[in-house]
Length: 190
Ligand code: HEM
Image 1 (cartoon, rainbow, N blue to C red):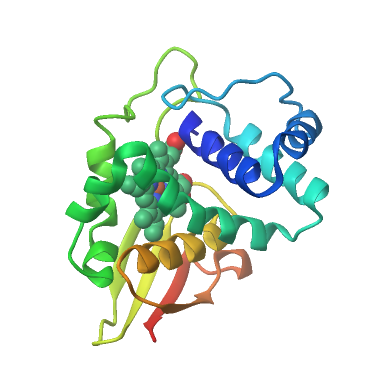
Image 2 (cartoon, rainbow, N blue to C red):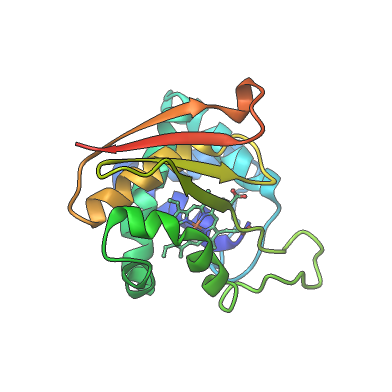
């Protein structure tokens, strides 16, 4: 994963728990003294280890952490200069949800989609489709080569809604972890 993801995790822990806790997480994840460079790439296993270490150090369930991180990510990405990209993705939450692939495709110009010298550093963007749209409800289908990230998507959609001034209820209706072909999430505007 691109360093920006690990960097986001770092910013979230620092903002809520401070430097000492962050250092404990890094140590537990075997990433002591690792500096996360936004545009550099790191093995996915390191990111998963960091989340596991955060769970152990903070004593919070992984799903809760991932959801919190998803929500944090939207304000973090906006602060890092990606706000205009988000705004260009649509005028409403549902429009943005329909344009998530386009948003990540555009990011491919910043985070190359092609591997470089290290082998593990190809950007693997998620894939989203939207179906069953009504005035206040949609079904979001999330497909990924990675596993276990659906709780983060719940938080990402909540953060995106907040960014648009909306309040939503996001429910995982068909989890991949329970054998579904992909994760499906129902998004309802309250
Ligand atoms: C401007 C805001 C955003 C930026 C800068 C951004 C950037 C990125 C980057 C750099 C990755 C790493 C890909 C890799 O290293 O393989 C990623 C992954 C991901 N993004 Fe975004 N993203 C943004 C918004 C969103 C939103 C709004 C959603 C969903 C509602 C989303 C869902 C995801 C997911 C689920 C992944 C994990 C990849 C996977 O499933 O395999 N992102 N994003």
